[in-house]
Length: 433
Image (cartoon, rainbow, N blue to C red):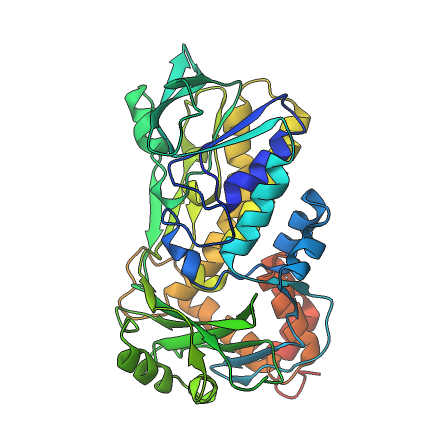
C-alpha cells in the first residue's frame, strides 16, 4: 500500500480480508499522536465526513465511533445542527438521520492507523518513499523504496507484493511509474476554480445554537465563503474560502477583514470575541483532477490506483474522505469477485464510474465562478439554473432540503434530484411543500 492517508488506511483494512500481510509505506514521518503531518498540508483545514463515508468507516472499523467520541469528536446532524447560509437564504434546520462525526483529520487518521496496526498482519513504515514499480512481464510484483529518515526497520530497498495499491494522494507518481515501464500515462480532466483556503483554530466565547456554520459565496457577486466546524478539545476550525484567485489572507488583520466581507455577517460575528489558538494556515492546491486510468487499453496486473491519486476533488465540497471510503468498498467487491487478470483494469473501470459522479458535482459547480479553467460541457448553464431552482426551493421545503443533502452526502444518486416530486417543488412556484 502506497500512502498512509485516509484512502490508504481504508483500503488497507479491506486488504486484510484478502491477503496474509499488508504493508503500508509512506514517505512522511508519521506522528505518534493525532497531529497534522507535513505530508498532508491540508490537514489543518476542515475535513467534512459525509454520512455515507461515516457509515462505511464505522462498518470497517468497529468501535471507531466510541473512540472518536471519547477523544472529543462531535456527532453532527447535517440538517438539524447546521446553519447553512445559501445564496438563496438560510436552509431549514430540522432533525434528520443524516449524521456523521466532526473532528480534525489528524484525530481521525490517528484512530484509523491505531486500529490497523493492532492487527499483527499490518505493518506501517513511515519515511519510506516509493520511487518506482517492479515488474515481471506484464505484472507488477513489487515496489522500489527509498528509505528516508525514520524507516530503520525497513531492511530492503525493494519489496515484493501480490498486489500494489497506490493511494499516494494528489502527489501520486503512478503515471510516471507506468511510463517508465512502457505504459501510456492516463489522460486527465482538470477543472480549476483558482480556490484558496485560510484556516485558524479558535475557542468561541459563547456556545451557538448550531454545531456547524456554513456561509456560501455567491457566483458573480461575492467569491468569499467560510465554515465554522467543531473539533476536539473544545475548539472550532474556522476556514475561509475564496474563488477566482480571491485568496483569503494569512495575516490576522486580512483574515478578519475577509471574514467580514462574506455574504452574511454570521461568521464575522462568531469571531468577535473568539480566542485564536493556532497560526493561520493557507492552502491553494484545490483543482479537480480526474486521471482516466479506465481509458487505458493496456494495464499491468497486480496494480491499482485509488483515492486522490485517481480522482482529486476541490476539497470545499467535503467529498474526498467519503469518496475514498466508497473506493475501498469497490476494491473489496472487486477482490471478492476474483483477482484474475485483467483485475486491475476491471477495478479502475468500476472505480471510475463512482468517481465520475463526485467529480461532476464538484467541477460543474466550480465552473460557475469567473476565472475557472477547464472544458465547459454543453448544457452546463441550463444545469446551473436547474440546481439553483432546487437550492432556492430547498430553503422553503425541509423535505426538498433533505433530498438535496442526501445527494450531497452520497446517500442517493444525483438522479434523485430529477424525481417528479423534486421537479414539482423546484419548478412550480408555491409547490415546495
